[in-house]
Length: 242
Image (tube, rainbow, N blue to C red; front, side, top):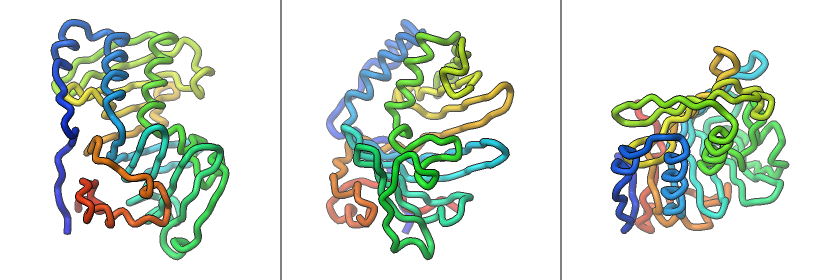
């Protein structure tokens, strides 16, 4: 059965003053400080992640449920993708240089433990699972504050920061990086990366659930996410809306 969950669950944390702070100063530096402060309030998060990438004529498109628990436990459940055996794949990162998981379909019962830099564990752009989290995007934002020219577009629901790096070779050849910050949540809503005028990567983050109390056991590729429902832990839907 499909069910809808609130976009954000924050436990007992009350978030006050984000709009007031932004109204006073919408510079990249001020926004970065607020994003970092917001992130410090998060112990774990879940979100729906939609990712599109291109590299050397290849395309990758995936829709995933993404789970993160501090300090750095990551689980990715692929709901839909265009690579072989994508649908039903699970990947887990628990630190170090390895990831574990299984592919979907007929490969579901074969658990793999491989290098985090293996082509089976990275995007087509070579990005490893440990560099897929919110903190990594915050690091990118921080890099741009120091090394890029910034412009800001104010939208009703978000602030759109466009960064032009002074030296694209320092950031994988990216010549333009656009990061959207949700004005209410002060969380990353979207990122777009360009090589020249070509969009080479886009990630949309949505349906955030924060501080749900994700257990360490979740970060095992054989763990059934549905079992958490009986423990009263709010979860992302395991289905796509049709």
